[in-house]
Amino acid sequence: MRKITIILCLSLLAPSWAFSQYYWDYGVRAGVANSLTDIGGLQKTAQPWVLDMKLQETRWNPGIYVRYKIRDPFSIEADFDYLRLEGADSLSTNPGRRGRNLNFKNDIFQLTVKGEWAFYENPDLGNTYRYQNSFSSYLFLGISVMYQDPYGWGNPPGGHGLDWYNLQPLHTEGKSYSVIQPGIPVGAGFNFTINKTYRIGFDLTWTETFTDYLDDVSGKYVTAAQYAAMSPQQQYFSDRYNQIPGALAADLPKFNNYGDGQKRGDPTNHDSFITAVGTFGYVIRGRSNLYRSHYGGLFSKGKYRIRRRRAKF
Image (cartoon, rainbow, N blue to C red; front, top):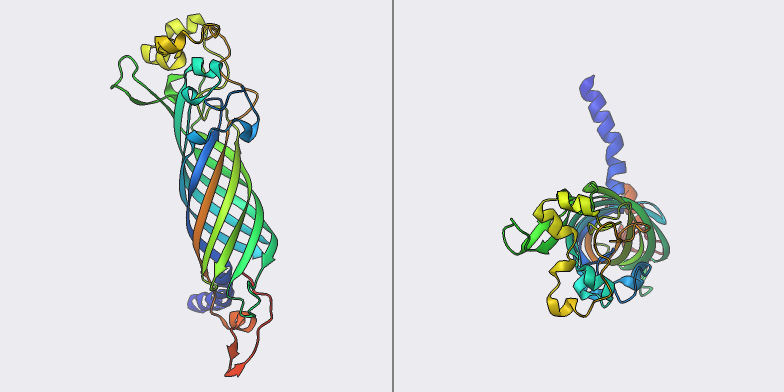
């Protein structure tokens, strides 16, 4: 009885599974990422969104993806990305930020699930009636969870020389934060399907996070009493104004409000980042009778037939 039940279940699931294969594609992602945080930026202070983005701080973003078409025009996609964010006040033209003299890098591992809406599709590029090549453009919204852990570049007392040092355990602002953070990715993309087999695309994504510590900067400097209680390494990464070379410091005489509870960052805006990623994938197509009846080629049972049915890529 048990064998009969298993065989019956498999026989019921097999046709559905074979047909559903047609809706899957998977592949690799490769692109760039840029941070929108408190560190670095352009000349003005706290410009919104991309108005404060520094192209010199652009870094990499490789990853993998898998996508499933639920029903036209909706799909769901899962991505796993490794991306790096970097920023340095030394690259800013804002005197206040240059005087603050902070920097960071953050290697982020991010798992994302997002829903896609294809607002425009062309299932038969070139009007060949073969439906071999197609185009789709879409908008998406999702949720992500990321592992993030900022590091700072320097040569602190008691360290191992000029290198990157983990900032999260140092509590440079006297506060702790988690290395696991959620995010909300939103964006747009497009892709081409070639010969019903290969899919080449591009995504532009802005990810809003729920933390202001991707760069280890958010609120205020610690007070003088808190600073005195810190270790030399904590003090080094908490207030770096005194590490500015003398010639540069002489050009910033009026910016002396660093330390002792003064403003260090902007806690009113969470950190975010932008990625621009190209994708290359493989489309899995089912081979069941149901698939052939809906998406057969030009020839069927030896007779020439032009398929004008809308292809489901």
